[in-house]
Amino acid sequence: MTDRAKSVLSASALSLAAIALTLVPTGYSFMTLSVCAVCLATVKLLLCLPARGASPESSAGLGPVERVAVIALVFVFLSLLPLPAPLTRITGSGRHAQNTLAANAVSEAGNTGLVPAGTQPLFSATRNKAGTLRVLTLLAACFSALSLASRLTPPHRRRMLTVLVWTGAALAAAGIVSLYWRHQGDTLWWKLPVSHALPPPIACFRNRNHFAALLAALLPPAIALTVENTYGKRPFSAVLSAVPAFVMAAAVAVSGSRGGWVACLAGMVFLAFGLLTVRRAIAGIAMIFLACAFVGTILSAPSNYLHDRVADLRRMEKSDSYITRTSAWRDSLRIWKAYPFLGVGANGFRATYPQFRTTSESSFMTHPENEYVQLLVDGGLAGVMIALMLAAAFAYLAKRSLPSAAIQPTLVVALCATMASVLTTAAIDFAMHIPLYAVVVVTLLGLLLSPVPEPAMPRFAFGASALILAAAVAAGIWSAGRARRDDPVWMSKAGPDELASALAWSPTSSYTWYYLGRKAWGRLDADGTAFGEKCLSRAVAYDPNNYRIWRELALLRAGMGDSKGAEAAARRVRDLRAWVHVALPAGIEQEQ
Image (cartoon, rainbow, N blue to C red; front, top):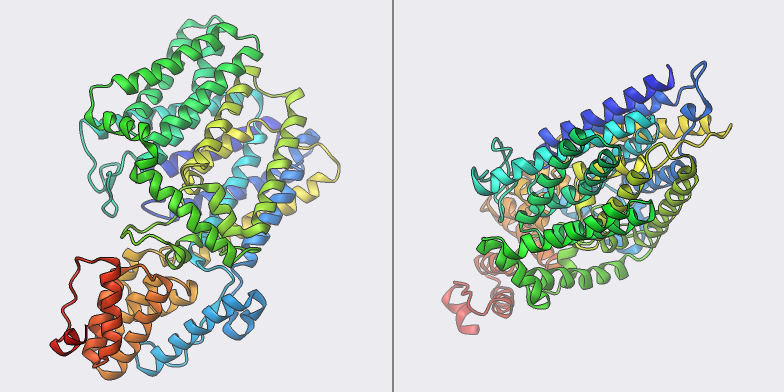
């Protein structure tokens, strides 16, 4: 296979993956990401096979980046290894105690006939196996996309940019339609049903912040393509490439996403100063005016919603978003102190945060709205070190690739501006956990790199590619039908067998304990009620500020005749919500 053929195959795989993740987003079906990860990893493996007549670069890999990628995959995979509860002592005393409680609960559920007797659950180091499997799949897709993007020839790199930019423009146009003409309701693309959320979904995103973040990342390349066409005296192409830039900027402005505004401005300002360094002074000055026009559009738009969003920025420290985020960041440090070295496992935040939160808000947080904080919580010090090694390896390889850059300096500056936008978004949101955003971003960053032409690289690159493919396949098979085991909506509809299995996958999930206890309590017999009380007691231990679970526990204990226990639970409800009344039997109420 020639270099050109490999480039065509890489570009095709990347384009199809981006389109698939757009049309059937993982917010609706996890299978999309799984299939994309396997396909991208398969193409990467095929391209690592040495070919007759091919240049050394076409058979090599990304060297230091791939070495760290292997370390990252192994780190995540080891956290997934299933072990019997007694053997989990090697993962730490805290995890072992949690696993033992869950194993005893599953055994008792078997004794009461709630699940088949004799079930022996297996536990992993991660506190959320379903979430970790999703991250493992995402990592496989991202590492593959990064490698494939680095193999594109100069013409295909520019075409890849064009495809991604126009994909972003199509998303932006759909988002504007969704906001002002045809609302989507609780659907993606007006067809795919998802759970209710406020504000509602937009285009293929359940969260408009992620919608705006993707467009903010794609805007610098779109502007750079317009600049290059203008300086190249291609007026028609310049006008044509300006269309997606204008549509995406407009969509970010009217989206109401304050994080999107900040990320967009960060990219535009970086691009403006970057253009001044590559002899595009007029374009750089024009960019400064465009950034001012972007801000002016937001401030002067005839929309009460946008005015309210701007007003919140002016009093940021008093806004609900700021208070919620900063509170989650502080509470996340408490989680890290409990799991300092290895963390709680990739995506384990959602299963451990309720236990450590200081707020009693009813909202269910799945992420701390900050990728840097989540990295510390999920990966611990080990994960942070791996991330720093990956960043250093990328910077080294990018610097090594720039002298022979396969794209124009203007586009190099634009991709660096995209990095500025991405790093800004990471400080205020969790967009890198969204597959479409992550795959598009790493594809853009891969355009800055070139394969390492070292004799030892082909063999290692092939081994790394095989490992990435194996990880993608294993994660897809392992999580088939079980990818939503950490979703409270799924738990509310699951049967006792499924909940018992989910408990082994996430021993600290208060929602899993709660719904398992509800199933046992619903049997209306003595054994089921007693077991249900134990599960609900464990649920409030893992979410002590959830007044709803405390209220149900009070009612359950009252029905069992445990007046002191019911009174203690009711008192806790009043501490959390003074206006909530728990209707306990008269005798117990007199004790209050």
